[in-house]
Image (cartoon, rainbow, N blue to C red; front, side, top):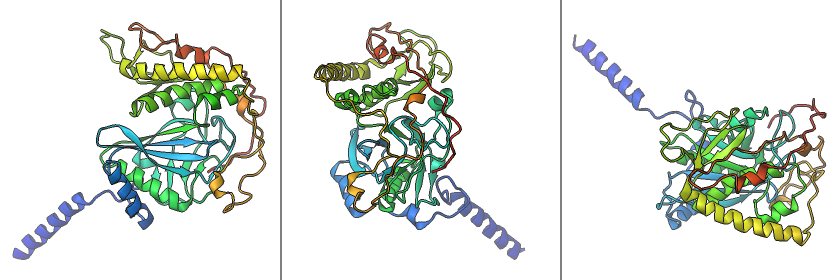
Amino acid sequence: MIRAMVRRALILTAAVAAGLTPVACLGQSSTRLPAKATQELPPALLSLLQQKNMPKHSPVVVRLFKEEAELEVWKQDASGRFQILKTYPICRWSGDLGPKLWEGDRQAPEGFYTVTPELMNPNSNFYLSINLGYPNKFDKANKRDGSFLMIHGDCWSSGCYAMTDEQISEIYSLARDSLGGRPSFQVQAYPFRLTPANLARHRNSPNLAFWKMLKIGNDHFETTQREPRVDVCDRRYVFDAQPPPNSPHPLVFDAAKKCPAFVVNPEIGRRALEKQRADELEYARLLEDEVPAAPIYSGLDGGMNKAFHARFPYRVTLAKVMPYASYLPHLPPIPWIDNDSSLTSKWFGVSFVQPIVCDLARAGLPSSRC
């Protein structure tokens, strides 16, 4: 009898202990995490967090810039605003400037992506990897496809943003720590820093309207230091939307259907509008000065930060695939509203009034995965 009671007590203790055991890993609940995915941040980075008054487990936002070949990690400080923590040179990205359109085009994605714990891979063949979650709602609504688009190590890319193993170790750890008790973090992927000078240089690109749409979200982030809320409707990104004044219904967005009536959060909108106006004036001045235009297609397969040129010679080569810039689907104007005179088509709509020529004749390219 006593033995039975002891055995029952041991079984109960084991069951309770099992219930208190933490989740084994991000994205893989049944396997033990490798040491590379659990290691602590290096002392220098922990010291930097302390200097910048950033709690170790506060949210992060990751920003990617193709042309500059840089990855930024922004982290929320004790005041609740995001500040730049560290900039990492990108070792390799593939494709050309412009969004990813289909499986095998070697294009690294551009847009706004949400990374959940399930997209963190501690057992990647490329040391560690963070799946961007491509295609997102915007990509699917525009009939774009592809898979396994990552930020990872190994400095090799076929549609990804590749870092060195040392870099991805830090980035992965920062992302992992930020997910404690949170469902996700945001990744913003851009063709280049969306300055008036860069947009003027790339004014002839068929992707210009798409990039101006991304710039709206970029400006919301940069002027408020807060993560923009991202929705999709009418096959477009919508940022920091809220119901019109006195609206009795919550906003419901369908990525492929007409946008519901909404207004942009006025506090965010005013700041973004000031930046937009200043940027548009500078853009117009640059066009008047006839700043040289960049070629639409570089002829190269991706890019690499100059910090890695000596270490990894010949990693950036002539493209093995055709350019994709001319395949961007036509994007009709957004039906913005301004019942409260906040931000509307008076400003943002001008980014989308020019039709985009769509050439889908070149299809059937071989597939490849990151």
